Length: 597
Ligand SMILES: Cc1cc2nc3c(=O)[nH]c(=O)nc-3n(C[C@H](O)[C@H](O)[C@H](O)COP(=O)(O)OP(=O)(O)OC[C@H]3O[C@@H](n4cnc5c(N)ncnc54)[C@H](O)[C@@H]3O)c2cc1C
Image (tube, rainbow, N blue to C red):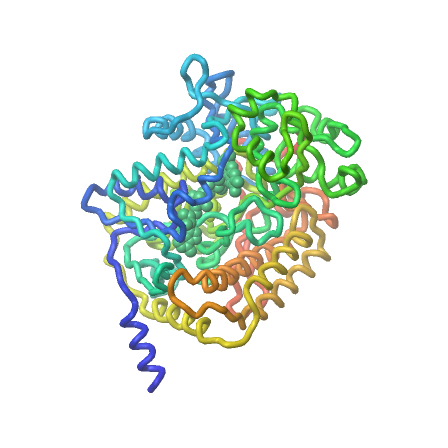
């Protein structure tokens, strides 16, 4: 009797919103999709963007170095070269049809962004200026090319501000500081998605957003690692929600470590610092990348540079024998540092208290980017399985999605490009589907389940705190499922992640209140992190080769005969091993070759 009354009360307390389409996430991917949707469907369309952060605080705003397109503004370049670099950068795990779309569309996308108002840096002739970035080459690998378009070292900030202003102008509805915790999927994946369930952070109330189409653009999950460039909020919420709902996650074993994180802090020092001429030095003052990548040197792809740094450290050539090396930008001079890299130079001065013009900067690889995520086709439609079945009404774009254009390792500046190209394409496809989609069917069970889970957490008096388990998870993933992996470490990691999951069933929160309950939010986010970590390690244990960011001591070679395929991991609802399926890689032009830089 009590239970019935409680459920009825909980249901009555759920606030509902009826929209045409819901976009979850207000980073570059979500905003561009929303803008496109609104433009396609016209002023009457009710397009809502839900974001747990105030939109301009999304991680896109932290992107520094640039967004690439073969504009050839400062030297010869072709989109086909960019396409090749992307495929090679991804260690041939890239779907080449998708990468072709991205590299070809890049040029139009950048020009369109400029017309939307993005203040790019200029050449003396007034064209969009371009600089070098790792793995971007001329003529299929002959040497570095200037392909990254940038607004100083605040490119993401400029993109986010530009798109947000355009969205406000288009009268898109914003639901700021609402955290989505579940999908409305009343009939399972075949029946499609009909909205989302969210918590309003300011009040603690449960809101149900009903819509005929939903896009997840919730960003990455770099907070599964201890040393990371990712913001505190990058906890993989969308990725985890899809996984819990029985949908697959693709290529989760590939997580990029960026070579130049600030030592111990993890904050990113953009590749633009090397793009402008910065070099890496070991403890003997040697420019060691010349040995590992004779052509591209410090601008080899990120997985190669990060592994080389670890190799130097392992062989005792870290600085003073410790676990870091130096980034040397002294020779770039005051003008480059202060005008082209002002934020980076400021970080170094503020956080290390040293002067980049005269001092060497301590760096170590930092967890940076999720190549894997929710599988989609090239129009953002979420895939329900490895055979290409799609989920009606459900889309994903940006870092939470896997198209796959980054394969086993993403090239710098290709992520901002990915969110723009595929965010926009998803918006266009959603608009098309909306013209004929049926009215949404509510998922009352999901609404109720969220209310129940929240009251249970609030009501519990004893248990462990989320922060303790999170810290252990981050340490574990960093040491056992990071840059260097082995079968033994991965197996240990898997069983330890499971043990942490068990402990996380009994979390206690100190704040029992409703308003901005960050204690509650962190408990929910820990659940998402554990899901992402589990899918990552499960996929990594199974892949018996080394490719891109997945480097195993016990199987050091790439094995195309057995492993030129995408992993699709499905959660086991009973908590056992994930079910793994595989999907062939689409190879259209570039046959896999050994990868040298
Ligand atoms: C420090 C740094 C520098 C980078 N520099 C570059 C660069 O120079 N070039 C490049 O190409 N790439 C760069 N990247 C990578 C790139 O910035 C990101 O991959 C990209 O911006 C991700 O965009 P997104 O739209 O997918 O997600 P994000 O911009 O991360 O936005 C995610 C959105 O989802 C919302 N959200 C998440 N969970 C929920 C939830 N449960 N409910 C509601 N809302 C939710 C958040 O509020 C946010 O609005 C960098 C990344 C970092 C961390």
